[in-house]
Image 1 (tube, rainbow, N blue to C red):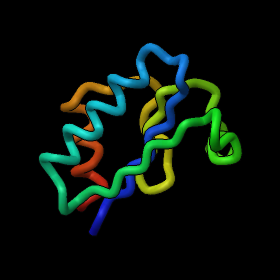
Image 2 (cartoon, one colour):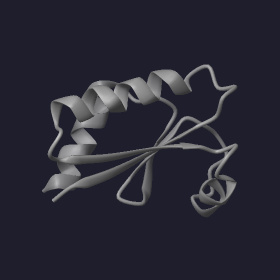
Image 3 (cartoon, rainbow, N blue to C red):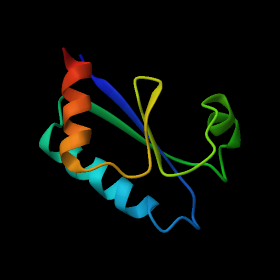
Image 4 (cartoon, rainbow, N blue to C red):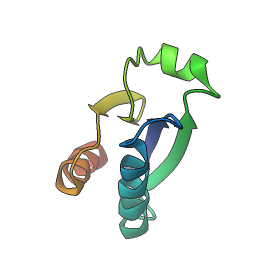
Length: 85
């Protein structure tokens, strides 16, 4: 099974680069388990509206928003492992 991770960001967000970097780091450690998509909400507003997002960064796993704000690496890996079970 592959977990789809969507990272929602905006160009003006000071925390978004950290969230993107974290997801990309975890992707390198679990390359066969993750599919990552980075979504700029300024370019894809429909997707942000679909997820009812009011803040960024936000991270969705398999279509469900799991984090608003940047999680720790441990929190992210833990939720990914739950999804993989």
